[in-house]
Length: 320
Image (cartoon, rainbow, N blue to C red; front, top):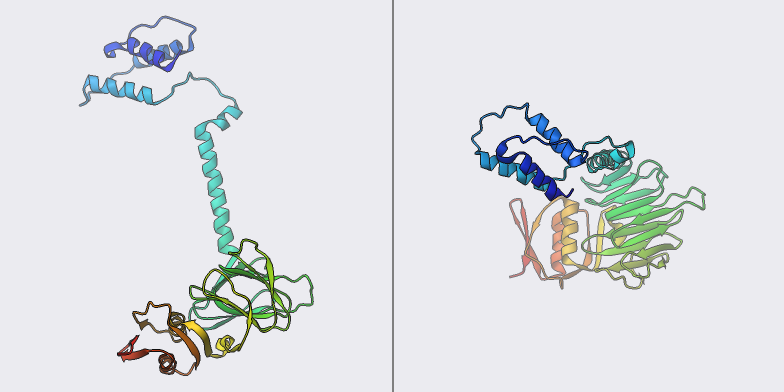
């Protein structure tokens, strides 16, 4: 019997809200109607503000929107396959997966952030990292495997444990750096620049994350790899004074002025107000950790800028 036939038969059986006798039948649908009829005959309808016609129309609408089945005893497999049961099972599984993920990220992922200034951190394998203020690293706390994610600027000194199989990988948004025992390198990847400098005696390898080939390349001792966009240029050899920031000495070579301002703000813990948006302003120069005014004077001496100290504010603007 189709759903429409079943509804029509029900309409006839309960015409005008009255119970019409239903003859005995072996038909399963008619058995169900008989069961409904017997049950409703023992019910007393309470008074309602809803009219008889509106109530009956609502019942028919509900019947049309749902699929009714004859009551029977499903086996265990059928119960598991029912939509409600599957939904419940999925919910339970989701809860367990969610709890495990919460446990994993709470207990197994270590996140270290240099909030108050430059910070030195020692990894479980004895390797060390010097983090610039505002930079952070993440890695597996349990079962440290030498794989680290860096956001910002850090200098790494890889511990030499005498094991040739020792792996040390540092991943950023634009690269993966592979280093051997005893390697030392300076790595910066932020909104301003990507810069990788090999400070060790042996070569280190790297992969460009945005490269289609994903080919492993080599960076020799003393070489610098830098880029101001997603594409890397060839490594170069030049002064390594830009890596002396760990000693409080800052040096830049044709660096965007916005990058220098950002470094000054982080290092000295200040906010510099400015309206500089031009990307053609670059700075080549040095300043030491001996006061913010000296740093600002150096920046302004190499550009057409001037600074104003207004109570607790520092304003940087074009010279008038």
